[in-house]
Amino acid sequence: MLNKSALSTVSFIALLGFTSASMAQRVGLPVDPVGTGPFYYQTAEGMDIRVSVLARGLNHPWSMTWLPDGSALITEKNSGTIRRLMDDQLQEAAVPGAPDGALVSTYKGLLDIATHPDFENQPWVYMSYNKDLGGGKEAIAVARGQWDGDSIQGTEDIFVGQEGTTNGVRLLFGDDGMLYLGVYVTTDSPEPGFHTDIQKGKILRLNPDGSIPDDNPYVGREGYLPEIYSYGHRTPVGITKDPITGNIWATEMGPNGGDELNLIERGGNYGWPMVSLGRSYGGAMQSDRFQMEGTIDPVAFWVPGVSVSGLTFYSGDEFPQWHGDIFIAAMRKGQVMGTGQIIRIKFNELGQEIRQESLLTDLRQRMRDIKQGPDGRLYILTDEDDGVLLRIESVN
Image 1 (cartoon, one colour):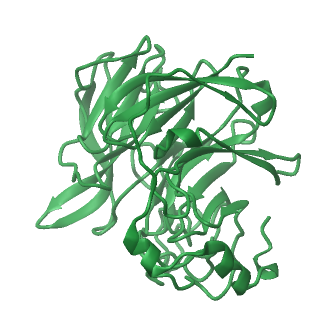
Image 2 (cartoon, rainbow, N blue to C red; image 1 turned 60 degrees about the horizontal axis):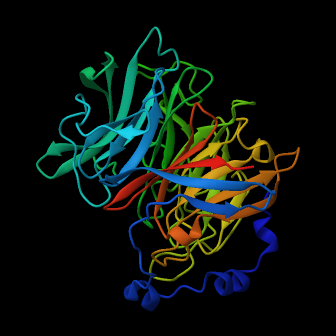
């Protein structure tokens, strides 16, 4: 775990190196469309990998999930549509059944997609999106519909967040069968993360039908919303579970640096905004402390930030040297465009980081999501105008 108290403010200022002037310049590297591939790489654990382009022309894809027949559903954030990949071919027609009323803009639209853990008996498909409430108002929402083999039928909202909740929402079914979702703060405001009467800056826990479980940690506690599972977050942009332990992990994007990887504890307080490793976008330190009694430290952090997003643990057979490692999609490093990458972290037997590797940096893409497919390979979505679906496989 990070010992923030051992690090001086001066050293963090030097590490961050951000100023308001550098933000204004919006500097970056040229970002060209991904080539036809395949691309070959050597990796730190002694495995050679091949990266293939399975699909392209996606409109800022945000998430993907697999169906029992081996096909995959992919959300396109900026068009509000769902596409289907069958036999490694992207189908031209959109999948019917995406939620209506999505508020689409640069950072908003159709977001995550997930299937019910007992899909064979309950073929529900869950989708998160930014909902237009009318009159210039908005909120996050989760909808679900039933898969009939070709489309999603009877889509309807099961959860609509508080007015003003916004931007990305990741979905995860835990081993307990409950639905977890992260809610952004998206500002440098000192209030939302700690305020337990609002949904911003929280990870919520719901029943599969959108209702609130009776055993949530704050049910019946005055001053706390009963749907809260953990709080003190800024932007929980990715959420996954360890397939061995069932523990829930989340990535959290800081404002200007201070991105985090967190092990999520029931009822945990993760410190935002009183505790932070980052700066405000204007350049000033977000907080005057890196550690505070009663808050939970990140397992890993990034200074400068790397704009973390989706993540997954690797548990397949394709890459034996990567077994148990966590992979994180990252969109840009140090506020420089064209520096997206995939980050691999290896842990020791105590769950502590011992090694970190950056992959696919030469593609210069905003890496939005990464998932392990049913074939044991890794799949990546790039959040670009000409978004692509990439597959990583071993060539050893």
